[in-house]
Length: 391
Image (cartoon, rainbow, N blue to C red; front, top):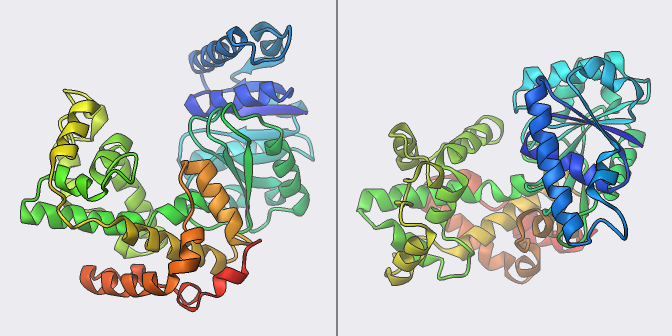
């Protein structure tokens, strides 16, 4: 199997590394030699670390594995003899469409184009390529060698052959931490499975942020509400992910799902002031003293009683039910397993089966309180019929 990885950044180099470890022949392609060389260095470092632990197999060296890697900056010529292209370029639709067309114009009549996009429509990427039936999504989580989940997405025109081949290729890619989990995504909808299910919690969390800001409540008190039941409270987590990222994601779902995803006012103000969270040194917290100082502050804080983890779980269950209603996943076990593999966090259905009536009422009350109708429970959640949709 000959694999071409397009884009040699953090995601691309991670994908190329696991493809090499699976025994595939790999071509790493980008637009400049310096980008390809940078990606090659990351792969070499990763493989050498594994060699030193004996994790590449008996007598196998990093150089042995790297002997199956080629570098190129000419996509049109590099694609001629490959079976599948995994695209990990910048999240801009026109660029993704352009490289997809280049692949279909210059590759074999069987070549598959699999996009690692986390947000963009697979159907749109393939639409003008000349072979939309050979275009699918292959969404990895970061860092690729360590995160178990890969979502394989069927676009409107994706053929069964393309989808099944992509599932097979992905299934052979090793994971350094636990078993690889491949989630079949049967419909091309915003956020696919994992990101989609987790997205609406930000509607609620954003409302909490704005309420706390209006009432002058210290951010550490909001994180104290989580009571140590989350690895990071909502404020620390938003800082860690990046407040600019929170706005970018919110705007995307605002356009594709509902205006209720409008990013919170206080976060927009922080970003406008150049405070992006941990990466800029300041967001909800001052990060100059490190994470331990923030943790100590949260531990000492009195809970504000504004944020409830149970509300977040109810929101996740509701969105999981919407994913089932829309036919994106065939059963709730896939959704729960994908969430555990992609987020290191249990999905909502195990607890939801026992609590859906209570949680439906919670969500009706929350929608009334916040004015965010997207949070209202869908029919499938209210009825509890989802319990019959395991597989």
